[in-house]
Length: 393
Image (cartoon, rainbow, N blue to C red; front, side, top):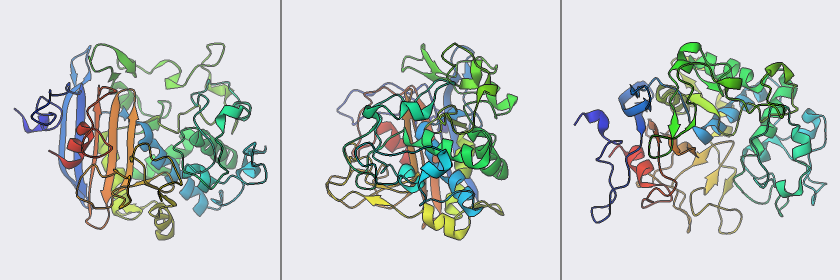
C-alpha cells in the first residue's frame, strides 16, 4: 500500500476489538514547519463520478477553519484603523445590535469573534442572497439567556455579523476583502464560496459526500462554476450578486464555514502562525496583532461556557487553543498535552483541522471527506479519524 494511504485507506481503524469504521471518501494531510512542508499525503477521490484522485492542491470547503481567516482579516483592518475590536459594532452596522434582554450591554467584534456575544444558532445562519441580517436577528430565538461577555457558546451566527461589519467599514464585499488582505498577499488561490477563486481552482473542487460516496452534499459542479458561485439563491431563485449591499447580509459568502482552500493553502496559513504573523518574508500581521490572535479570551472554568462535551475549552479571536488542563476538557487530539493554536472544522461529512505548535515550530493541516455523523470517538472529544490525521498514525 502506498504511504499516501497512511490515514484514509483501510488502515484507518478503531481499536482492534472494534469493527473498523468506514473509510473516508478522500483525505489529505500536510505536515509543516516554519521553513516549509515536511510531508504531504493525499488519497481517495476528489470527485467520484469522474474518478478524479485527490491532490494536496485541490480546494475543499474546510468548514469552521474559515473563522480563523475572518479573524485575521479583522486584525488587518484593525491595524489600518478601519475597525476597532472594542467598539460597539452598532456604529459600523448603522443599526443597533443588542441582546433583547440586555440592551445596555454593547456587543463588540471581540465578543463576536470569541463566541461571547450572547447569540445562539437558534435561527438559520445560512441566509438567502436577498436576506436582511438585521431582520433575522430580531428573532428572539437568536439569543441566549446570558448577557454578552459572560458565557462562551460556539455560535456560527456571530460570523455573518462580523462580515457585515467588515463590509460596512470597507465598502467591499466580504469575500473580496478576505482575498485582498489574506489570500493574495500569501499567494493562496482560495475563496469564500467560489466567486473569487480562479477557474483552475474551481475546476479542481473537492466534492463533499455522504459516507457512501454516492450522494454529493456540496460542490458537485463537475469542473464548472457552480450556480450562484455557491451562494444561497435569493428568495425568488435569483443569483445576481449585483444585489449585494454592503453590510445588509454578511451571510452571503459563508464566513462561518464557506472557505474553499487546499491542504497546501491550509499549510501556508499554518506557517503564518508558526512565523508569528509572517511567512516567507511576507508579514501579514504585526507582532502586536499576532499576540492578540495568540491570546485566549475565554478558558473554561467549570461553568462559564458550553464546551460541547470538552471539545472547546479555550478560545480567542476566531482561534482555538488545545490541551486545556481543566477538568471536563478533552480538547487534545494529539494526546501529548502540548498547547497548539488553530481550528477544527466539521460540516457536510467533512472533518478538518489546522494546528500549529508555535513553540516547537511544527504544525499539521488535514481534512477527510465522507466521515459519518456518528464517526467513532477517540480518546479525546475529537473523532478517531481526526486524532489519526492529527498525529499522522
